[in-house]
Length: 356
Image (tube, rainbow, N blue to C red; front, top):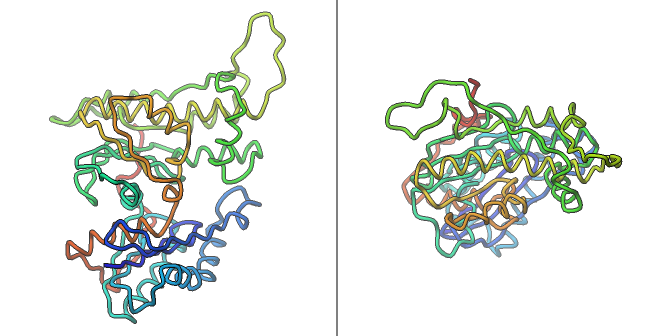
């Protein structure tokens, strides 16, 4: 069963063909980074216009690389939520037209569920449910329990900024470059992560957990927050600098800022994740999303010998069509079909929380 996957939720225009949910026949990702770099962030209007210009050629390239024609495709899977609304509508409209013209099923896919599935594109032994999911990207930071490929219970999420968003904003403030996550990770390799001791968030307010659910210390035991860290790095840098008695303080190195920020940002994530692992008793963790490519995060999780941590290959961490096609296969096998009037949604309820 060959599925065409289309992904246009943000600034990557992507398409792929995947056979039987795991065998990637092609995976084409065209990045818009050069067009957004002057603004140090994604400009939604530019993103949607570029998708409109590129979508036909990207899909054609994916078919050509798979040595297939439109007549060989059994179904079309496409991201319809969450993401930038204009960008989503471009991919969704193209997928609808393709499915209608070929009279084949259309499958609308949740972008974050696809990120959770991405590791199965290359995993010899797919994780058995239930397991813990760690979904970290520019727009989302989610810790969840997965009971099926499309059935998750959100245990924790961000109450303000997502992890990837914080990386981008810090990089933008200091003119480190764009995209922020990749730039900061590269700089951090040459920096001292102990040069600054940035604070971890204290989420002590909130309603108690419901009866029968794991202990949550004020309702936020698995949640994360990045606004405080972002403010400390941008506006209170000197306050958190580690002073050495009797020594003349050297000039602040950008690499030290990057390394110290990255260390704290990752620690915020793993603290909440390890709380969830301890409380649920689940020892398998499946990561996904752009931040899952971060080498420091991978190394930090590898320290826990009692946990099995599964990451997608770097090419499947960012937005891509292969993960959309892969999870689309499972929807198709279950008998799911999306009507041609299915629409896009910028947000998914429950993927972010309010505080307290």
